[in-house]
Image (cartoon, rainbow, N blue to C red; front, side, top):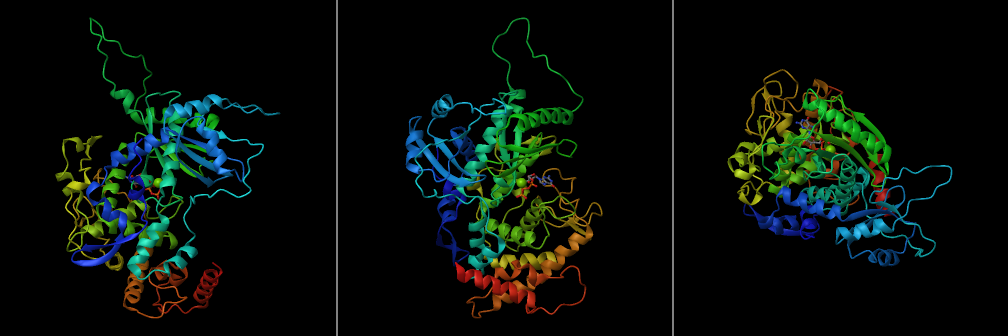
Length: 545
Ligand code: GTP
Ligand code: MG
């Protein structure tokens, strides 16, 4: 089982000095070490999927004795990796070295005997461990699976040395951990087991923020049910006067086929999927999906099919996120900023989405005098034969090899980029121009949507068509105010003890009260009673820790 290297690819654990653009700066150590051996998206996915195949999920008794637990499991085979977490009780993800070990555990597990109820005997890789004894009396160490509340995050940021370090600290706190990724890929593999009841050759792969390097702890799990393996199968060797094909039902469109398949898999998840609750079939959406909650994993899942371009978008974002260490720190910081101020929302509506915001950040980074990231057209020009992908008539080709890309010569630290991002969009001519990461240049808007962000692959589509004028106005007003605050914070060298400063100042909702609503010019000092009490509460909490 290939397990090496994944952790360093996702965790920022320590800092090192790097000479970027002739200036020594603190950057995450992992980004320095991994420069020459950066894995392709496909390699990372394959390793994670392999781990997941050998893994099981076990609901443990409270205060389970870890040593006894591992001893018990070792009768089925060697445990390669394990960790505990809390979600509706204590759970463990256990990875065995071999798939046979999982089969051994399965063959020894029994069907629960219940009174006044009936079990639906679908045997998955989720188990309950019942124990009469062996409690250690002390709770096992559980890994956190959700991100820090904003107030606690701001307190932590206050302990950094400077704003640049604050952006890396935010990234470190928010990004998906190795354990969380293992859990996500395990859920994906468990859903594949359900789909396999009808379609043994189908695969289920995570996409979206789980894999695009911008996932925050607690984000949803986007799953893609891939049936292409079935269609792609080549005819067998047998020749002769006939060719045999399957008799199969036919429908009038690919969309209708996707709806039928998702409908049935949704029913299976609802009826038999252990721990799957709140199943909703949203089949008439532009992209049909099945939404459900995976309770033992504590994850909200969206299962789609026939959404191959979204998979390519995920890989493209992964390439950008891993190209330069500043990209992820900036994206995480701005996603956090946008969420705190209600620019993005968990509820669908006229808000800017995380995906649109990320496109805006990449476009801004392409527009620097010395670009921080290349254009999509440049990535396409580096594409090899294996990178050529035409999907539904759209050219989705770009290099998957990070080692082919020349590092950026731009020396700007993330704090400077953050301030310039706010200024750039505070002054952007949204009435005239559209944003396009393929060209990295403003172009005339083809139609009158308030915000026009060209879909990188389906170039005639606007990814932010849903955004209305008032949401865009709020974004611009907040960007202008934040530009002012960050500038002010960068110039200050005041006493920081027990004070919110730097990045914390643009993440405090109270500082912005009324921005985007009141047209009157505001007094900019954070002196209102509300802010004072917020700061006081942060101080008190800080002391209590
Ligand atoms: P989170 O907010 O952390 O879930 O980010 P996300 O990137 O996972 O976004 P979301 O779950 O909304 O969508 C999953 C994936 O679908 C994205 O990563 C994109 O690849 C794709 N996607 C989302 N919104 C759009 C859109 O408006 N247009 C297009 N073309 N693709 C989208
Ligand atoms: Mg998502």
